[in-house]
Amino acid sequence: MTGDIDRPATFSSQSDAQRRERLSRREASAEVYSESYTKFVRTLRLVLPLLAAGIVMVLFLWPAGDEEAIIPVKQDKEMLKEQNVAKNELTNPHFESADQKNNPYKISALRAVMGEKNENLIMMEQPVGEMRMENGANVRVTSRTGAYRRDTERFYLNGAVDITHDRGYRLQSEETHFDLKAKLAWSDVDVTATGPDVSISAKGLKADNEKGTLLFTGPATLTLDKGLEGLE
Image 1 (tube, rainbow, N blue to C red):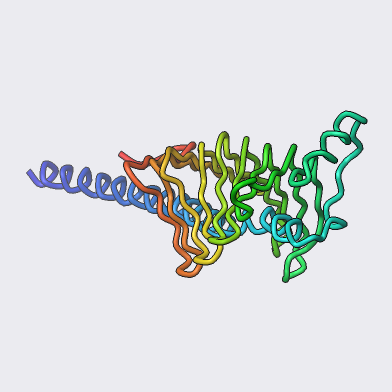
Image 2: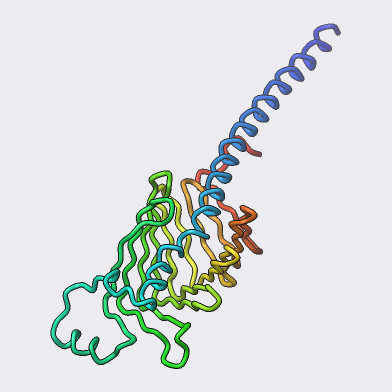
């Protein structure tokens, strides 16, 4: 009878050990992916409010009469003739400089046009902005079109908005808004953000650089590419 009592006790001990081992693996896996997710969100939170800053710099300088700051690439005679006729239009503008913290950036576009009826409105076709961050990382943003309102300091990207970070982070949406005065960035349409081993799909996002917050609006889905091994 003693043996019958001891055997269940031994089995229970082994079962407890197995449960502790599973819990340990679960906690370790959750911690690794929690750190990955936190780093992912932190990077996006810093990048989003800054990515428009470089693009907007060229829009400040051009209407102010600093034509030398914008360097058009070589064009054929027809394109030059068209540019001379359209005084409020620049073809293939290209601009390189640095921000107040000496982070270099460069801006280019297929075309930039000032609104005929509203000089506060500046439109860009196929804008491309590239900026180097303080930590040495490079950020690149592209879209089909862009619009900037000088009076409200709001910037709008529309059509295949693609924001990439050379550390493996990427954000894609059909449109993104920026309020430079309030240091806000947001999108009210589907957003996909990806990073090393993690991705997020949401119905929109709101980034507040003053508060240091980044909110993905729902329903949102977080996907961990490698899964959580050990979870049951």
